[in-house]
Length: 346
Image (cartoon, rainbow, N blue to C red; front, side, top):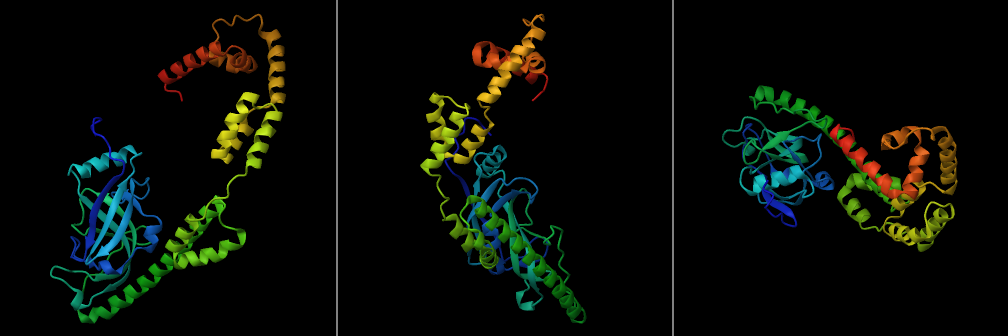
């Protein structure tokens, strides 16, 4: 990626994801039978069907147009690999995408067979994920998976004597797939409600009813809960927080307004920062330790001591230096950081 190239505000690109034609693997799916509900709750865009790494973008505006599935990828402009992929597609070095599905129903109906088709038509399926790929199955590239992530193979279309056996086998597989799909829907519903419980927008008595509703229509429940505003922290809470940590000596009079402003923007994060700051009791103990240790180490020549020496031998003195002689402290700290970096120490 050239450093001179300026990125647009939003990195988007439209795709025809798949259609009803026969793919390279000699089977086809009916676009109208794709279930998009579960996918829209987590519309991740992966790379090469690798679902064990972070997504490189997200899919938007998924819709069925005639016999085609259309969608728009928004690349993650804050991810270096995602930006590289954006330029690959923008410059024409890559142009393909591929979807991963779970087959729910298949058919050997001759009316649905097209020239070159050797395997049944997938009439109903659930969409798992859509990936950016270098080499697709063809223009409607499809990966067929089991709910566990393994490869799902369609049976060859056979003569009538074997057709009933094939349909029975597929019927059992469909039942198993539906059971797995039901488990996955339940897990998705639980994760969705847990997310909004943590946001503080779901009451305890709502949890179970919302889980059941999310299994039936997760997209609507997600939209409803996303619209709920998180409870705001009151001014009293901010004032009490600042007062508590000022009185215990963790912050100065000058710092009160700074931390108050921070707490108004992110109360929980500011609370954690203040709780981690030592109070006056800890400072007094450190000063006492420094004076005690000073008698034991006074005879040592400290002019060549490094930051690490102070840290190991007299940490209290190091803390005191930071307060009373910040210029000397900063010099030691920078020297230590440079040495650590050169030796590969983090």
